[in-house]
Image (cartoon, rainbow, N blue to C red; front, side):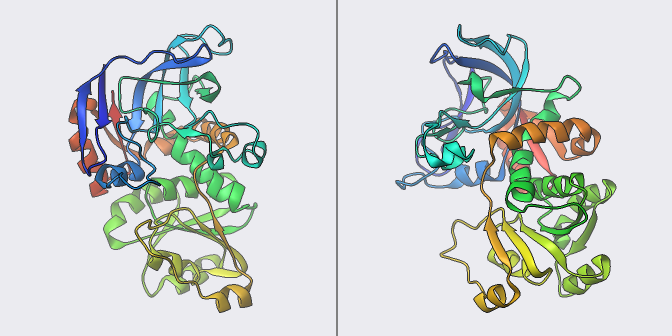
Length: 346
């Protein structure tokens, strides 16, 4: 099969190769023929990064890619809830222990034993991937495969907005960052009966135009932002989300959230030595600062439901798809941020 492999720990050392088609490692596993694989911002970062550090998330040699949809091609003898030909998405956290406090509370991503599709085991930037059958979720029949490949970023957004942010009907939320995660957060806020606002820069007007076409209010992040939020909502927001991962954006969230409000950090600048926090502001206004990382199995099911219910709106977030042979062009397009989500078609 064709596969895009990060060959070594050296930056940018990724090659499209002829590889052996993977075999099922156990009778409870599936082989999935990949239909679409989204390029995540983390894939771009990992493409450029040096992976030699002991705590590196990427473990070369490995095939990246963790946002995908596909069709069951082969199943193990112990798999009874899936059939060859079923359309599926695959949860990215593989073989957590099931015994630790994190597994028992549904926080698989924090389990020390779990592995990640596309980081320390082969992922979706290839014609086939294998995963435990328990990781596969059937795609609703009315949902196209390309839109279904948005399940992973939407599941991360469900965690940000619902599981960590605890959004409630009638509340107001300001989301910084009109990229795929920010856009999915805005859709999740609205699906919960709350009111979203997206904040971006002048360079992201093209993305905000798509969001405005979906009926979501957008503002530029400038000195007028606090007043614009105050005028639009008639008060400050109950919740603010940093979906960018820059300290300046994190500081901006404090200017738009009310006393007793919540700030959810959905992205960070991993190259930063640390953010400064005005603890007087946090303490005096009793603002909760909450981190949100990755997703949970529950969030994946909810994400698929949201995609099915609002597929025409989510379809607008797909800016293009490229054959695997044009992966370098696709990566350049994704890194330029000219559009929203760029996908590969293995």
